[in-house]
Length: 366
Image (cartoon, rainbow, N blue to C red; front, side, top):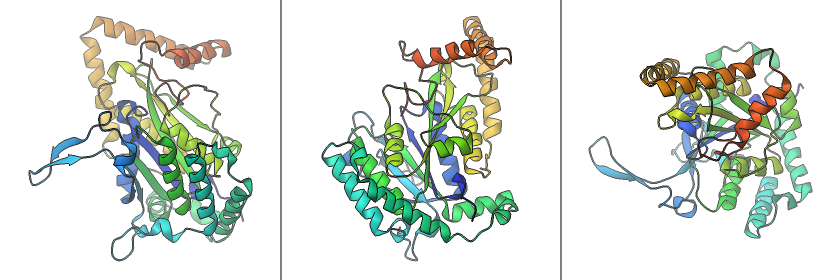
């Protein structure tokens, strides 16, 4: 049987609001995917355990009946409707559990509690999990020809039936090791075979050019399959990097996709960056994702900034400088040295707090 491609496995797509989410681009993209697939909540973390309410405050709102309510910070895993039983209770993530995953999760939690490196997990347990995955793969009966002949709607429906899970919420403010262990536990129990993390960072980029997207993976196989790069960043990270690191240790390959958002419009959502992430996510998953009005919103967003710049000479001049720098990097004549210097500038600029690192790991990352 032909080897299964990354997007044909069971994939968990992840984004967190906050530090990793400039212009709400990443959370917006994952929310669109969740809504398009009509996924349902299957697991909520305990906010008391992972959130500092002085840092991530609860929000007050009025519901449809006009009653004022509190919305607490949360991170929720969503799955297909098929993962609920007839009584409407979540059961899918337990349905697929096998003894081997229990033992690996126990080892992972033990390492977290003892503040050990997750690399200390018994490698034989990881091999056992790989063996379970191979057994699961042999049960797949769809041929490559049948998959290639599917319409976009049919492929989206098939993926929503069993293959796509989502993790969406606020970035936790404490107990990252325990949080990561809990999420990886649920991922293993749901037979997740790959994870895609989405992020967005502020950068010195012009709004008038295509949004820069950087995709990377620590998996050599995925880098070859999906034409990805390997991040060389060293420095502070956010929860996305922690989750990706532990996932790789337990045998779940991970793809990181980051978009660069113009820092001079950081106070507003960036539908153009959301659209760029959606387009790259489509390529990774191998299936179309409905955009709704996103393309029109991206056009209106760009036009709105153009209008503001038209009334501010300093802003217009600054944007022109960014355009010239971007065009230099994108031009066919650009030397490798020029591109490297420009890329390095994006990586290093953190002094004024405006920029995130351009390789996606972080200044604003995780």
